[in-house]
Image 1 (cartoon, rainbow, N blue to C red):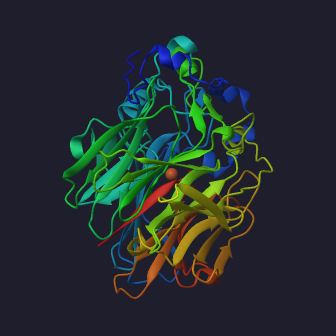
Image 2: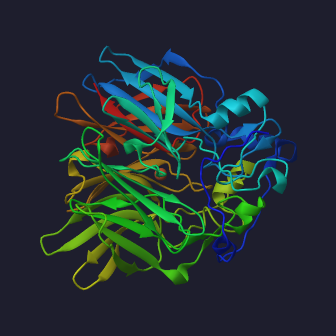
Image 3: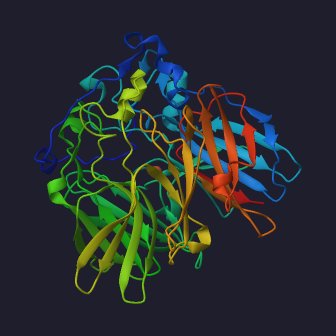
Length: 500
Ligand SMILES: [Fe+2]
C-alpha cells in the first residue's frame, strides 16, 4: 500500500508526553449502519460530476454576474466504509456561473488529490483523514499519515482558483473547467496552510496561517503581496498542539487564537486514533491570543489571555481610535457538537439527528495591548455560524454582517441573518423545518448599487438543493430567486464569488 505523508506530524519523545487521552473510533462499516443512514442529504455523497444549465425559480437579478465557487466534502463513503464525521470527505468544488444572459450554469468536480486518485483506482479508503483512520487497524495507520482532501475552502485570486484543506498544501484548479492543476504552496514557502486566509481589501495582500503538529508544533504565517509575491514568512514554535481553524487580521496586526483544544499525537503516531479522536477540550488553559505585528512578523508576538472559547470562524478585526483591537467571531462555550462522547457531527453520519442546540454566539474580544488585558462580550445570542461581511468593510470597523442562523435537530441552521453592528438591529429569514442553509456568500452586483447574498440550501422534503439569492438589503423578504440543482448537495463549507 502506497502511503504518503501530507500532513506532517513530527516523531519524537516529546510527543509521547503530550497530555490528553484518545478515544479511538474505527471507520464506520456500512453494513453496521441502519438503512436510513444516507437519507440526510448534507451527509450523503454526491458521486456524479455534472455540468448543466440549472432551473431558475423567481427572477434572476441581471446585475449578478460572475461565478460562485464552493468547496466541501463530496464523498463520505467508499467500499465498505463511511467517514466518522460530516466534516470529513473528499473535496468537491461546485460552481454557479452567472454570465448575464439570464441563465445559470452549474458544475461540480472532485479535486484530483493524490488520495482521491489512488482511492478511485483501488475502490476503497486507503488513507487516514482528520476524523477517521484508514480501515485495517493500527498497522494501516502507523506514522500519522493524514491525507490532504483539499475539501474545506476555495479562493479565487489573480486568475487562479485555490482549494484548501486544513494544515496542508493548497491545490490549484482551472477556474473555467475545475480541472485540478497542482498541489503547491502559496509563496513557495515550506509551510502548511489552514483554510482561512485573509484578503486585505486596501493593499491586496493575502495573509495565510497554518499549523504543523508534532513534538514542537509550528505555526506558519505567510504574507503575500497583491501579485502573490512573498513578502514575509515566519515559522513560530508553539508549546502545545493547538487546533486552530481560523484567525484574525486587522490593519496592523495578526491575531492567532490558541483555543484550548489540544491534540495528543501519541495515538495518532501509534495508528490507534484519528486527529479529532485525539483532541481534548481543556478549558482550564483558557484561550491565548498571539498578537503579531503585521509589518514585522519576525518580532516576538504579544501574548494575551482570554476566557476559554471555541471558535470555528472569525468575523472581522479592526483597531479603534483609543488603541484597542476589536476581534469579532462566532464562539461557543465548548465544542460539544464536535468533541466528546457522541457529538452531533458524528451522530449524523449514523443517521441520528441529536436534539442539539447550536450555541454559536457572536462575540467580541477587545484586546488592550497597553494593559495586556482582553475583555470578551457577547453581542448576539444563539445559533450562528459562517459569519461573513462586505469585503470592503474587512479590517476596519464594520457596520454589517451576515451569518446562518437557527436550530434544528442535529445542529444545522434553517435561516440567514443580517446584523447591523452599530444599531444592533437584525433581519432574519427562516426557510423552516427541513431546510438547511449554508454559508451566505456576498456577491457585489455589477451595477455597484446592490449586493446579493448567495446561500446553498438543502430541501430535505424535495431531497434536492437550491441556491437561494437574497437582496442583501432585504434579507427578511426572503430569496428573490432559487437556482435548483437536479440533485442534493452534500454539506458545503465555504465559497468565494468571483465577479466577471
Ligand atoms: Fe471553516
